[in-house]
Image 1: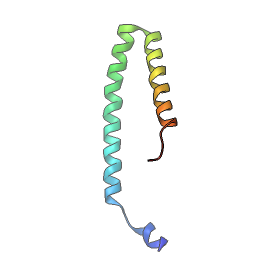
Image 2 (image 1 turned 135 degrees about the vertical axis):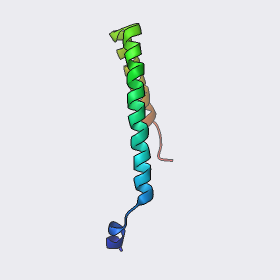
Image 3 (image 1 turned 180 degrees about the vertical axis):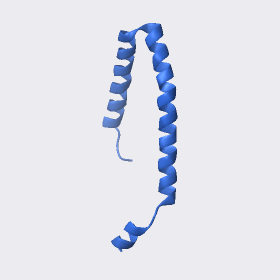
Image 4 (image 1 turned 45 degrees about the vertical axis):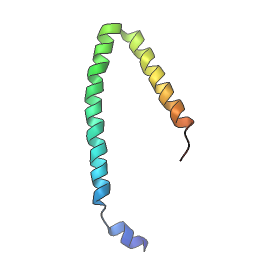
Length: 68
């Protein structure tokens, strides 16, 4: 039974991976534009602090989330 599962292709999984890759690529390019504006407008220190705060908030949200 495991062998038959390994041999099958999952087109829906491929489509989902393609969608995730497309969205991630778009957001990477868009956020680089926003990041450049922040660097030009507020300077390096303020942009770094904002990035650190966003990263810390995201890490804490993942740490305190549950599987449900």
